[in-house]
Image (cartoon, rainbow, N blue to C red; front, side, top):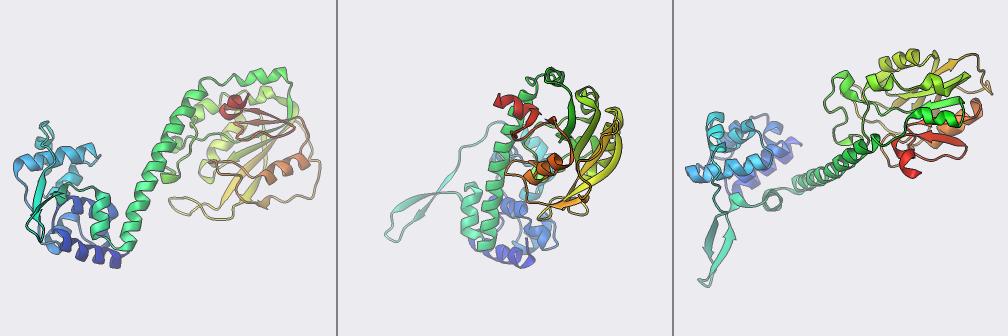
Length: 344
């Protein structure tokens, strides 16, 4: 959030009701205090005129509601202006009061019931007190949360599918393969990352390195075989370990130059690597191909690789072809993995 947007939100917020917990929570979630170089407590006290103190029953009801919405004790403490000890004590209270209603008089003297502004949903408060930029950001955040919930359901469903995938040794009934492409579902917890992808988190079930090491790639490979191992820059050390375990010698690295930059904690990735390895003495079918290629992304699915890569493989390496962890059916290829299994 830009500092000017945060400043405008702060000013607009005071026009609705200064210090109401819903507005403070929304501002905290959108990063308003941080954009102004303040803590949440400093923002409330210095810019909103201080906290509006609640009665004990109301505060306990608010604490229970915020805990239900996933706020941490520290966040609740900052929003309500109380200590974490008070939050902890209030959290044990289970008697949550009903949503309060207040009344206001119309011009004709009649009464109109309106929801207490502190109990209004964040979306309503955003529409009341936010600038266009902040309102759009709030709507985007809600949409992202909804998409991520759907993706998490898909990941859980895919994890269940993994248990039903047949042993890859069943492919030996087809025969051994002269060319193998592998695009493993890397588990970035191997590197100690908790949420490597953020909102771009993969929709497939990851597999830790210990399980990948047990794949019978050496058994599926012919005595002379080419192996193309897709790998992220972050996982390169794991890739060399897998090649050794599978009985291949590393030869070179192909680089896919993507049309746009992606994620990254330091440099944002704009390339992805393919480790090319050989078993035996299989030569290339052609000698005029460089180690880098430019191509658009392969599709809407996470980690789906560009079609031009497979055309490159077919022009350089002999059949029969095998793709492990296949994401898309290809003519002339044998596929294995949870996606390939579900299409049968």
